[in-house]
Length: 422
RNA sequence: GGAGGUGUGACAGAGUGGUCGAAUGUACCGGUCUUGAAAACCGGCGUACCGCAAGGUACCGGGGGUUCGAAUCCCUCCGCCUCCGCCA
Image (cartoon, rainbow, N blue to C red):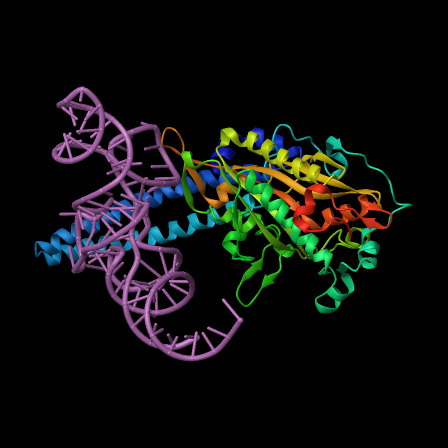
């Protein structure tokens, strides 16, 4: 969330920046500013009250030591009013803080300068397009048909055992998954990302830290009896490693990665969007995460974009890069680049990666800071990106690399999967 | 899951209900000394909030309570350790 310092010092810029998301936060921001002012006044009063009672307590201690019991009792009487007063003030202050936070949780991150104003995906900017996007819808099979024919993914079996959106991968299908994961992890390793295998469930503090809670509670699977959530992305456990930490500037940038299955309820989705591998409740993904010095986070973001490009080029898939408009970005992002691959049979683009800089928005919630050159503690910038999400990659591989009824595995991938065609 | 123990600053480790934000040691930073380094010595060395500042307030795993006053007593939750049970 935005810091109070930002809100106090950059009121107009914030209101202006958020208007790009199509939001008018003037009222919220001003309410926060008022509450903050009142809170500070309350705190001053509370601190003074506590200071008084501390002084009196010290006096009582001295009097007791000196054996002047009766005088001590007299002073004790003076403190009774202070006690009530300070607990009242504390309560009021707490009330102000709660109201302030409630508002702050509803204010998304401010889009960075590069980000265009806009309301929906129609306003996203296409930055670049790579490879040939050929519409093969007449000549090649959609991935769900091909997967069935080749017997490598079983959607019906998944529906029987678990439910829709939980497919089984079998034989070469399973090997393809495993190979892709390895390919992505090895590439991340080469790029200097340290691999983690994180827990697949997280507690609510972690959900809050990266911004899934309270905003997107309904999107996560919740284990009620233990109050744990299935991770919707490895971003959550990986970034929360740095919750409540103070890093040395020499430790930055932190570059880590991890493969995990991801679980999403996707409530409300239907139709062609959920056909085949297009949208699943459980899918595999390799995620890359960076914790960066604020001065270097633009470069870090570029580095991540370049990394993802390399992955897609290795797979010989047609893709394009979008810079999301303000209104289409996630709640916590300041800037986001989406990668989409071409689905030749469906004749449409499928999102396979989202690379974002959150600047200090997550760091503020996470309380992740670093010591700068002058020894001051400042919030870090956090970034993450998919590198990559598997299902739509598989869909695109199956559709784009069809040849004489078979699927040709791209050269780069062959050593990882162990075969050349399906 | 049951029984017992334990949780203090970057780390190690004291701490009697009253001047403890916390001894001491190590690490770290600055200085003196040295041709340089080491050693030795001197000084500094937590975080957050309020305040122009002086200074004030809060924080000793989390939350709550007792008390004029809690790191210290009580309750509760969490983590860790030991033993038992169960188990891939």
